Image (tube, rainbow, N blue to C red; front, top):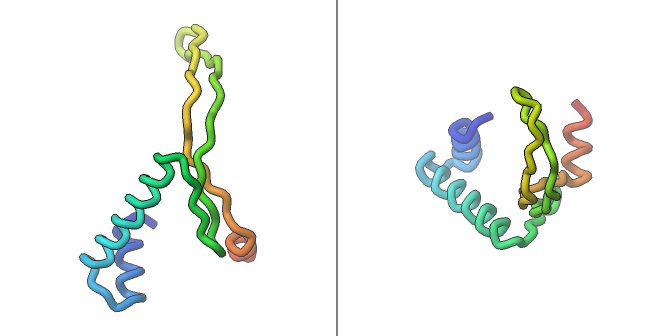
Length: 92
């Protein structure tokens, strides 16, 4: 499912226009992005939690040349599904 399909499905379920639904989805995604960028955690009960993890510096290898390359440490977003979501997905 892509963003347009999600907007259509939510708009249909809520009897809202796609324009309003798209705006709400954009605000939601911006809020999630801004919160994670600030280093905070987001918890949505029954769905899961988002947080930022720090990846350690690594030594990787260039596949073409075989040369060793240092990959610096960085922050990456992480999602942990709730037990309810795991159970729902596991039933299929």
